[in-house]
Amino acid sequence: MAFFNRTYLVLCAQAASVVMACCSLAADPPGSPTPSYVIELFTSQGCSSCPPADRLLAAIARQPQVVAVSFPVDYWDYIGWKDTLALPASSIRQKAYAAAHGDGHVYTPQVVVDGLVGAVGSDRDEIERAIEAARDRDGAMSLPMRLSHADGRVQVEVSEGGGGPAGVFALRVLRARTVRIGRGENAGRNVTYVNVVRAIDKLGEWTGSNATFDMPDARSDDEGYVVLVQRGTLEQPGAILAAAKTAGL
Image 1 (cartoon, helix red, strand yellow):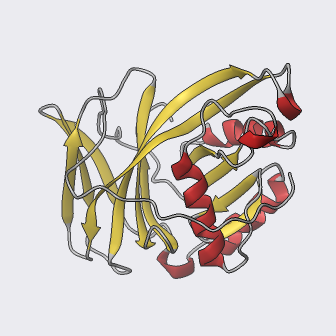
Image 2 (cartoon, one colour; image 1 turned 90 degrees about the vertical axis):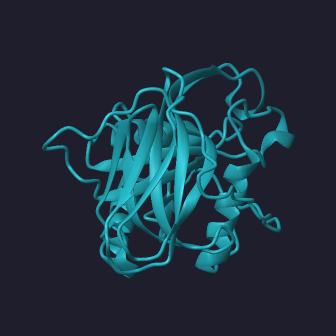
Image 3 (cartoon, helix red, strand yellow; image 1 turned 90 degrees about the horizontal axis):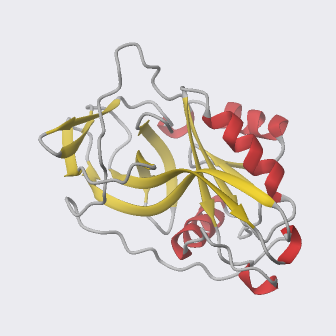
């Protein structure tokens, strides 16, 4: 899909303790690997180049040491098909990355690794190079974090460490959805999307000390959560210092 230029908007974050839904979230079982990196895929049902990237993300997401999420964008809706999973917040996030990384361009399919390095979302080799380029940069994925559930609430425990301050964000994520695309470049195709972000809420700020954040446990059965601790601002996002996910994502 061709590059797309547009002035990015500001995504309004909710205040600490104003949170989203979750249904049954247990702590990671003993021996569960700590996530090593985060992959965000910006995709569109209206983009003929995206289905290979969607399939690749689905394969990557099966790895327990990876947090992988899909952000369907809405800026291709005008070419013939309105993306049924797209959120304005997804487009805003991608444009914020473009501004922060200094290139000013967004495109689909694009992957961003650890909030730091972009790559073509359908190019496995380029994604692997991006993973290496992001490794240990700006404190990426260096901070321990844990999710647990008790008394009808989800708790996020962030350890003491360097690199703060940083925002703590909860992403409500749909595990999988197959869409029959009726028009546009993918007309007639059935495409399955995994780990689709449906909402983003800011739980608060981590300042470098041990901290606990919580939210109501009210997700639906086909949803889970990803939690990110990320430096910078919503307009200029930086390195993802920590990430955790619920079972099944």
